[in-house]
Length: 284
Image 1 (cartoon, rainbow, N blue to C red):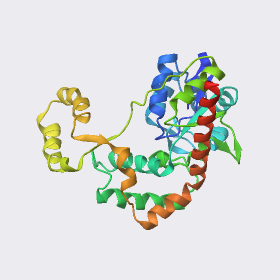
Image 2: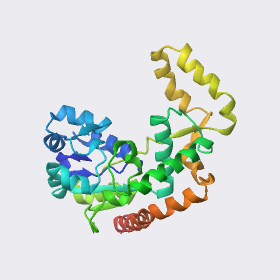
Image 3: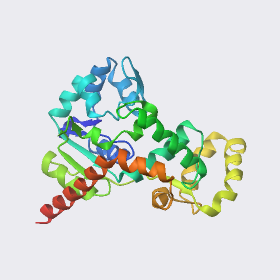
Image 4: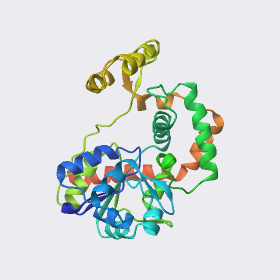
């Protein structure tokens, strides 16, 4: 969740759906408020802001990520955030569920498996996908920080079968988002997609071990930080999402993803239609 009180805008941040880009745009438009979250957690706003970026231990839920609260969690455990959400103009973004699963999987491998910059066709990816699907099969409703990126998108926009978020658009329709915020909140939220994951090109596998050794053993931390953006934008890497659909995770895993996220596929199609209608109405 991200709340911009000056424009009465509440962004429900579904993980892996371009939310960091929206957050960056909101920061440019005003000052985010963490007061409702701070009150819910019983901590100062400054600490709540930090928790929203990294996670926090909740006395009943365990380790959670306050930036990514499914609505059932918010309604049950975060009363001030829930009240703010209900009284504000609310927005969420959707994504093709398989692409989102793949993106979440790649981040998980980096965060929790120490995989670094690997390609989507690495055998480790399919192996981890099967493990994640096995876990999800046992925990259809959860808010665990380690698996927060795999929570169904529907859980962030609906509660007990009722749509609660005012506007839902696909993450590739930022023009529709700007048009909606202008109409609903009185300002245009101009969002640039500036947080895309990169992966090594196939031919770059041979130089990855050398580059990794140089980065870890030979370069001072300050030099590594300065060179990292240039390295990631170089010709060695490509946009990772472009290759997700060319990789199979195995028949059983693919079938589970399609079934588990079936409602998310319908939600994404609905959001695409809403974006088309929003832009058509703006043009008219």
